[in-house]
Length: 409
Image 1 (cartoon, rainbow, N blue to C red):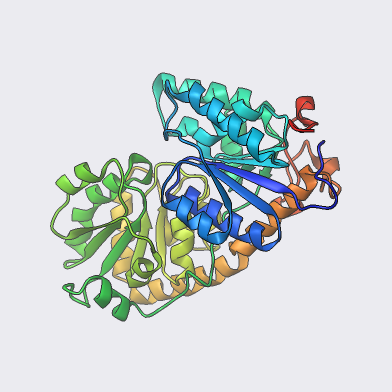
Image 2 (spheres, rainbow, N blue to C red):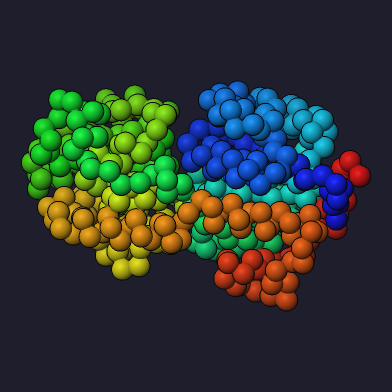
């Protein structure tokens, strides 16, 4: 396997599309930590706010124009990305999410140590023939990834059940507990929603307005919540392709905050944070909310159980796509302030212990060193079996032989 020259730090090339939401936050946090550790960090992505953020951190940003979804433009996107790879000459490529994972693996084809991180599986996001095509690709494309990083054991198990045979590594998502920290709700709420009754129970949902995040399910549950908790208000924070449809069907008690640069004040303003996703790998919004000391209600999708504090699923976890169950959990917690306060304190302690972004960055640093040959592979004797993520075992087949030398060696 290619190794960087001993007199220089490795260059990591992150590939990302999308450039917003949780994926962008993960890329930003990793770039920040890796730059601080002395790595040379380049990110290839479409133009947008993420570019400005990364440049401010000191990352080398290369413009890579690519649509969010695959289509007829894919061959051109792959060619443009191959040119970026050739110009950057990275020691390791880290592709984030389905589109960058598709284009990146086609462009590199395993000739450079490659990490693919799906951030939720592509075949869960679509249906019919497109789902079958996505699954076929993920099965084939796994051969061009030295490691396939999942953010939860549940996401890994979903991939294995679907027949995606790879060398898996589980590295849970992390958040910055300094950025997301508790604060009194009253003062924050007054600043964000000056016309709102301070005593009104407030539910907040932060996420892209799209089918994945399930805001339509929350709106379907909202009348039942209001019947049990008169005066309750709901704020949807974010924007996306379903924004117009959601606004058209929302009652007056639902407010739309739009896209925001900083979600932390909205978590702090909330009595309860809800994320009714249809699928995830491990959503960041609940982790951020819990770091702010707020209880959450989430749907039982990949990563949800693993993100919650032990013993809280009874109150905080509901089946996906079930408005009645969601309404019952939300109303029950709004009507029980002592329970909410207890769950919020427990949530903050849990995130500090298990989802600090510094721990996430350290695990990726360890993985990069392993792939670049600068340390022995952890858990090599158990690579074909399941083990604890902390020990770094990989699950699946042997490393692809075509991946053993760099494209520029």
